[in-house]
Picture 1: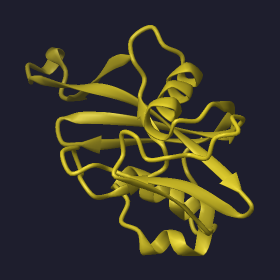
Picture 2: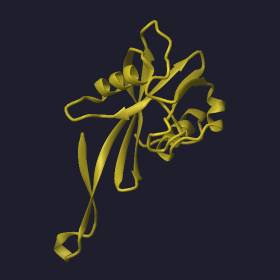
Picture 3: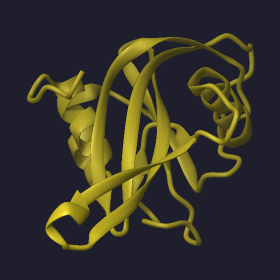
Picture 4: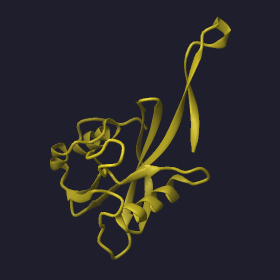
Length: 153
């Protein structure tokens, strides 16, 4: 799903209005035995080498939940139940605006997650999250899990 965000002046005062496309990204906060699943971006991906909660873009005509289930299958090879929204955040990234929505999710398949379309994946304790470099939008999620910040709801 893409939408537009208008920034700047209005046509009424004769100034140009910049339109930035919105990209909706959904992320799974998956906890097992006090650890959270994180994945590392591949070397050919944007923001290569950074870590994130399993996530991906919502495609046209797709619900957030369907997108998240698809991304978890494609990136970690697991089936998951998607729970409620934990928080959401809007972040400007270059020429785009990223609407990040965090969902609780639970792995329901008996398979262990494996790195498919990611460089690596790990289960980490909340206090270890600070040892991993996250993109700015995801950093707010780690701060929430550490209890040091609140996300927009």
